[in-house]
Image 1 (tube, rainbow, N blue to C red):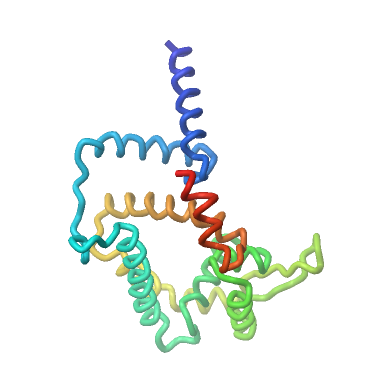
Image 2 (image 1 turned 90 degrees about the horizontal axis):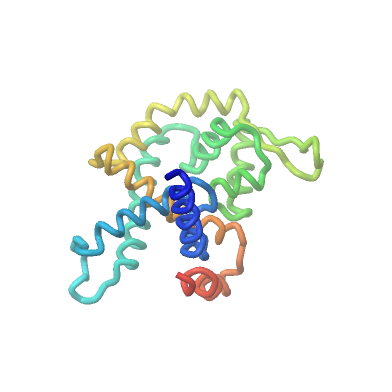
Length: 224
């Protein structure tokens, strides 16, 4: 019995590897579990897919267009609440406190690591870091391993500034989740993580804009 289970697991792993050639799922146990979950969902929905309505559907508007538009709009709504959360404070943008939150949560990291964690290009990330340094909220020092590498950490002043605003920031993040119940939130996190896992390695390649769409289409989408 145990041997048959092992055979089944090996076959599942082989199918996972075959289906995941475009690295939609992370290549670890979490990616494997997410793939198995999606297989179950797909099996249940093969007989009938309950499609929601969206604007322009009757005129041929694609699901991909709707998803892209909704993500853009949701980002704007989130920024609206973030703007309210930092009103009448020394924070200028939501990126200011997000950088501080990342440093508080994950500890000191290199300048490049901090910028990439926030999915920014280097010039924009550098401007934000310089602004935070000017306020005295973070400090950068040379790495003990490589003096050319700058290590960023949050200061006591930065922790204080963040803590003073955290009540409003938490309220803003709660509002962004809107009327979703717990089950909705867990499902949304799963789906958004799947999307993020797809896009992150593409972002990290720093492909030139003029080549990006063709490269992604060739390396990822055409293999699905």
